[in-house]
Image (cartoon, rainbow, N blue to C red; front, side):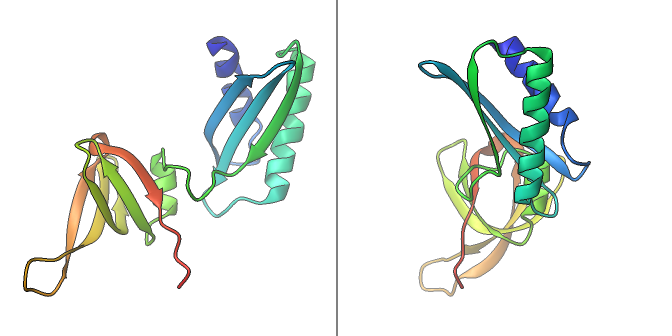
Length: 157
């Protein structure tokens, strides 16, 4: 199953529309009488339905041509939802300027505006409130290995 998953990852990456698009996650789940293939892709400047449809069609054609899945299967290509954790530097970069909720490896949680992304980690602008004082903005660097989970916070302002 891992070998098949790796082949499918390579197949999806080969069939992305251009360099702006990237694979976020691929899940291969056996169900009763079929295999479910869920592919999450994203793009630096936003993802379109047409891109998802194109990837779905090209990947399906190649799966059939190479006879990779020998049973019935269902393929779904979509973008990660707003509640899907960020998992790559590209996703972090795409969300600079947005509010994040970051669960740290030590169990603590930080909320703040994503200011910067680099190879070591991220920089958040967080509000720190001390007793009897007004909240002040501070810049908080967080290394990737300290991050357990990061989720973009949706704002309706």
